[in-house]
Amino acid sequence: MAMTDVLLILATFGTPLVVLFGVGYVMQRRHQPRERAFASCPAVDAADAIYDRAPPRRAAGRRCWQIKGCSLAERSRCPAYPRPYLPCWLAVELANGGQPKGECLSCARYKSGLVG
Image (tube, rainbow, N blue to C red):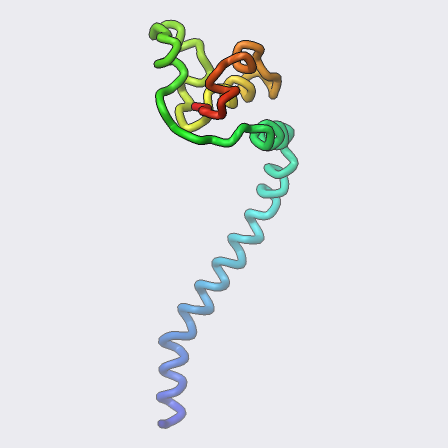
């Protein structure tokens, strides 16, 4: 194998790899300040603290507004309705700044761990 062949192979495969890793490095460096700012956000800390207290999720089941039979007007005021991916009590706590709502704490669904 001649030296020109080796240089051709390195140029063909090496240059894209160097560019790829260079772009990745630059993007990582630009992302670090945003990541640090997000990690120190009080809302994230509050959400993590609330989620750590969560009872285990045992079954998805029906949503809380389906069980309670809420009207569309009641649903539009409910913080859990636009967040179906969260347990209803967690959505309410996040909307209230991390404060639990008495209605949720006395709910049989919350107590049984069938949160949703």
